[in-house]
Length: 506
View 1 (spheres, one colour):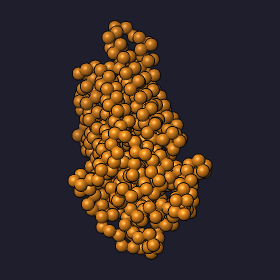
View 2: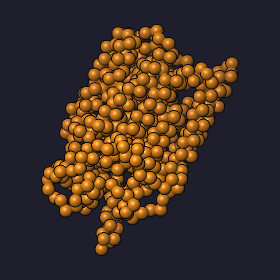
View 3: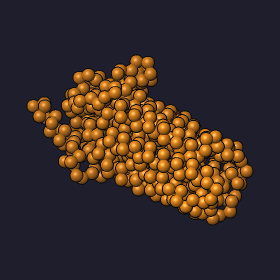
View 4: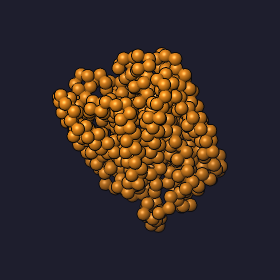
């Protein structure tokens, strides 16, 4: 009977048997994921604003690199704090705090009289982004039903790309204003969505997994029935969460006492000092997927696309900014395509195909820019090939590597390790991004722009090998059973039953 019941539950969780999406879970995921607009807007707007900041404040390329990249070194501070804050005050209030901090940063940047004050504003914006970067995928993965977790957990990446596109459009629109006012408005306008998000997230429910970790079972039950595809799935999810939190299955009290470890104590020791084989595998997989997502050069392309197009032969500011709008448009459309493939094709297949596309487009871009760099005349075909290669690059990244990085890393950690595990992944992601952003212009001067993209192509090859050997498929599995897929290095484990957790102790 137990086997038949498990099979029945598994069929209920099959996406093919659930054609209708849970509208309440979708609404919650959309509201939480909108925090990613903050980072996206900052990335997009800085690509164009940097051109005018450099002219107005008369700063060097190195200072522009630092200005662009430093926010990614500030954001890990926010991610680290958010990992603890989300366990103390909950996921929802942590999202609101992210909006408030970024609002302060945007206001400070918009009123910056000089470079030093601008860097001060970047610190607040970076911390706010770090908060949002961590908490949006954690919250979304915890409220999403299994059948649509890939779609809903990829929403932060959708809004991030939407924010980039809005930033590019803002660049183009405000570029028509005076030099002194234009870039300040580009940066200051970011305060508007930040304040809106800080208020609107208060209508969202709290994460049921966080509520159970606090012993608030009654509230968690009500929310689970709203965000699950069926009552049976809600009961199953509650049972899995209770098991993870160490709460007896026969306990139906509205408020219970839970082990203090559920509040985050002992997590760092388990991750770094005494990890089990599955936890070690999960940790390495999370660090690797975050590192390679950025080390393949996405922030170099997105942040410095005007300079890349200028290297390809485009001279006019107007055309440079229009070309970046095209990059943002293609990136956003591609991520929308990815959301409908994540729960159909699976994470692993999409990721490997995506990285293969990155390798091809990076090599093509490297070749075209090298040809342009050695030519004494304008080569229209090389300009066209460079633009096509950049568009192909952002498209293949957004279809796989971009969204899957956050979907995958937020769903593979067990509940007791999730907030801190995702925080560490976010730190690796942002630090790697910061290093790329703060060295790209110098790298181009050292080995040429084309040479820089050949280097990124080599990193992408290493990324493909890592993903192929270290990342098992997670599609269609509950968050609580995913851990059983890990611990088998260099190969994919055989599929286990729905509740085959005998080898894993939560």
